[in-house]
Length: 133
Image (cartoon, rainbow, N blue to C red; front, side):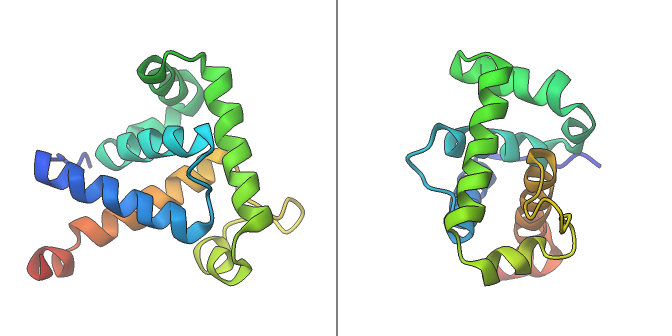
């Protein structure tokens, strides 16, 4: 199901993504931070991006920032790794605990993007959020 994002929603969406990335410990000074915001925004609007991360999502984010898809992927991976090395383990475990491999200790880029997008969308577009807003 595709979620339509209005101009008002886009401000709330941006704010919610930034708040979530801050909570997870993704440093705002990393390029991957901006790339994650763009990628998560796209996934919230169209979950179809999740089935085409390297073929569609990274190239579109790359065009937005005039960067090749490989740079987008590597920068996002760096941001995720930094969050998992420096972030609050309790918060990270609450978000990703059951979904990540114990061997790796951190989610893949696509797992990270998918889970954050899902949580943000649920927070913004659930019936409870609509009645509260």
